[in-house]
Image (cartoon, rainbow, N blue to C red):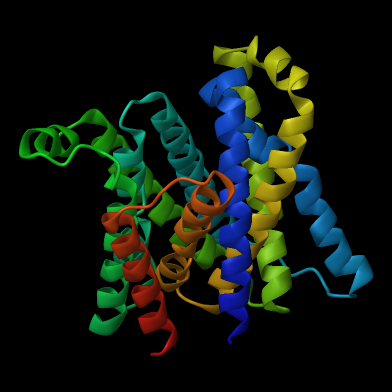
Length: 300
């Protein structure tokens, strides 16, 4: 199995854990605070990872330049918007439907990869992405009403628009981070991913701190009061991001994000084996579609 695949699966698992923790925090500190802890509390861990690569493994630091900075600016801002939109979905009744549409990220990343990096993917890859995205959406809507009126309402709801916008920004962020990492040119994919992570998360922390200070200064007190779970979010989030950035240095963002749909299988497994919930046919079909899409990608 290729290195980027192993890294992607590990990152998907960690992201599933992070999303669960953020959903818990959302009820205590609000959307802005829950978005901030993903970056602010992940910052020390990001630099810890980079320090280990430099001082523990002896890798050299690549030269930074304005092209790298421009990619970071684009990707980091896009990720902030995407994360805030995704967390805001937790407050909506049919958040599962909106979340499903945010999972169109791989397909949108393929489009933005073509626009920004001139990276093309084959029709087989596009088919694999479409199959995995369809599987995710089946799982996400499997427990919602499926009569024509309810389906039309859900498809035209505000949560669908939010979900699609979230997926758009996530797609832009994925391609932007790949562009940033590749622009460094070395010394290896671990350092490219580590430096990209530190630059992005430092910028995002500053942006979020300024925003909170200007708009919701009282949020700092709530964040401080929830520092223990916030620290866990920071560690898991930084670890997952390090995985994404290194994987996307090795493979196209759209392909990495398509394999990353395996995160839904982790979520689904927790629901079945930990919470002992029964499964229905649509959920089984969704799981099979995700597996089929990922296997198609890996067998290319």
